[in-house]
Image (tube, rainbow, N blue to C red; front, side, top):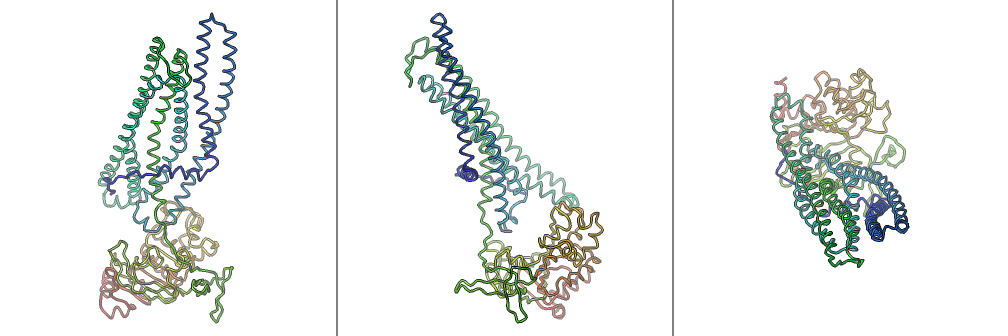
Amino acid sequence: MPDLKKRPQPKKGVFSRLMKMLFSFYPKLVPITIICIIFSSIASSIPDMYIQKVVAIIVEALENDWNWNKASAEIIPMMIFLVMLYLLATVAITVYSQLMAVITQGFLNKMRQSMFHKMQNLPIRYFDTHKHGDIMSYYTNDIDALRQLISQGLPTLLRAGTVVIAVFFIMMYYSFWLTLLTIVGVIAMIAVSKFMGGGSAKYFLRQQKSLGDTEGYIQEIMNGQKVVKVFNHESVCQKDFDEINERLCQDSYRANAYANTLGPIVMNIGNILYVLIGVIGGLLVLNNVKNYSFSGSVLEVSIVVAFLNMTKQFTGNVNQVAQQVNAVVMALAGAERIFNVMDEIPETDEGYVTLVNAEISENGEVKETKKHTGQWAWKHPHQADGSVTYTPLKGDVRMFNVDFGYEEGKTVLHDVSVYAKPGQKIAFVGATGAGKTTITNLINRFYDIADGKIRYDGININKIKKSDLRRSLGLVLQETNLFTGSVLDNIRYGKLTATDEECIQAAKLAGADDFITRLPNGYQTELSGNGANLSQGQRQLIAIARAAVADPPVMILDEATSSIDTRTEAIVSAGMDQLMKGRTVFVIAHRLSTIRNANLIMVLDHGKVIEKGNHEELIAQKGNYYQLYTGAFELE
């Protein structure tokens, strides 16, 4: 269960980094959008000046026995100008609304692509140490928080900020006194926003983390539903989920309690300020208080009327800014989590030896070729003299005095040496946790060794590019992973260029053809949910066929037949024998009967090799292997 006491701390620079990415993705569209938003915002502020002029003209006309002809001559041009201004503002609003749709969805698309690309380059260690549900939350909740910010938050902040600045200078133009009163009201609004927004921000950060914890737990329980039910663990799971969900509820409640209270309070401060402007402005006019302003005009009713509208605009936009605090905080919390993923150290690969198609003559001469020949060689450029040598791919794998630990200071393998010549079958046996799977993880460089050396065809595997190294290895895991698609697609996953005939031949070799042809649509049967409509044994057979179609010189079988019944195992074993011919094979097995024909059997205990030899030699020693083997037969 996740540690619910650990809470994320917001980092500085997240917003600026987000904006840099936005501008880098759309260097032309973003500035155009900003210009359109600013223009439309300023256009909405200018009419306040004309309201003052219109009111002043009407007042003057009334004081002079209402000369409409003179008044209309001044008012009508103003009305025409305002209509034109509003038309241009409408065009600007339409343009930036359309551009924002393009920018928002495009930005999210690029962010998902960047994040997925980054994850593809992360080491296996990252996925072993992070909950998959929490990782999924990056693509859903955190990306959605960014959508709210880009599509609504930022345009609103820019629009409202522009209006506030424009209206402020217009206010200063007409009256310092009334502007000062407005500023006092706004300071009160800001103080409330800071207090309420600070509490809201803290709990919105917690909400994002709690949401990831909740989704991670749900996915974990869904994946293990059969285990939950068979051990009657439902009530305990419910209790654990209730605790996590309650934490999410409390964080969300507190975040929204602050957020929902902020808007009405700020709005009512604006209403109070509106009343004060009307009352105090009227008193200043009645008492002929000297006005101070950039315009130098006398404080009149027309200015007070215009100020009332400007006050509404001013406070209303300050309120809009306050309401966007939530969207900004949630988005920054989501962006921080996303950036944490993108800042993870990728899987390093200093390898420069590559795998190439080759033509190998009878006398052993190797030539690189562009066409597929079925023969491969390691292309080894030597940095010292610039020469290039080619080594035929044979599958000679050797480990020399290897030490390894998943965590620093905790060694899992101690001084392990393995010599596997081309075509040999090497088996690892031992208790769970002895280090069998760890050895195979080091061969394909899912993890790198702490000490010692591993050589592949005489080449240090650290010099071989990881992608090329793994292309030369076939892997069948105990836990089978099938992907959404047809049975044929899943087999072809081992070699994307394989023809249908090659895939079918691989299935026959693995002993999978019989059950596949009896499926509703044969090889075109669609699989989903990790092949949930197949038995565990059938899924394992498809995984074996997938490895077979890759036709690698080295095969790693990690409990490959563990989920297959005894009868099916006999069928698969025959196919596996064909599959293993001429290949170097590493086998991890608990069924010792499946490895009797291994060239070398290595018995591990707590990361150390305690016995090694072929089946007859180990039986003759009557040691650990003898006890395991005879015990297995007693159980049978």
